[in-house]
Length: 80
Image 1 (cartoon, rainbow, N blue to C red):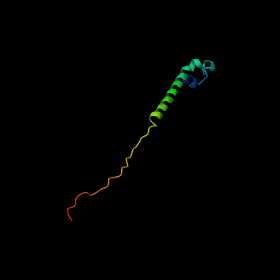
Image 2 (tube, helix red, strand yellow):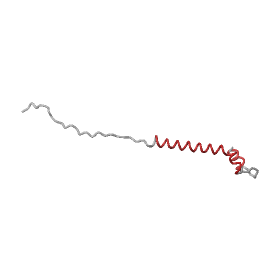
Image 3 (tube, rainbow, N blue to C red):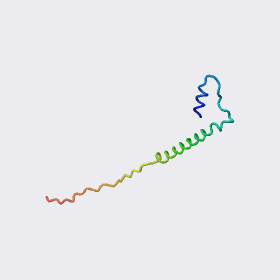
Image 4 (spheres, helix red, strand yellow):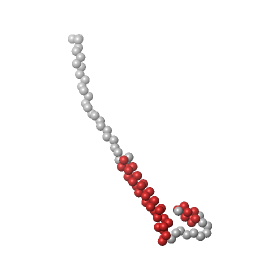
């Protein structure tokens, strides 16, 4: 329906077709309004899911800082 109005209202050289009146708005554009509301709501939910599940994750890095064992030379020495 929108394409019809675009072609026959916007591309006319002489005025022979007017935009529908406000009284007949709901009969002509109600389906478009519901579709627009549905698409907008779906996009909003998609963005919320994207933010919640993909962009709010974090990584935890654990670093183990153990002191090294002291090096002792417990090897017996044969030279005295």
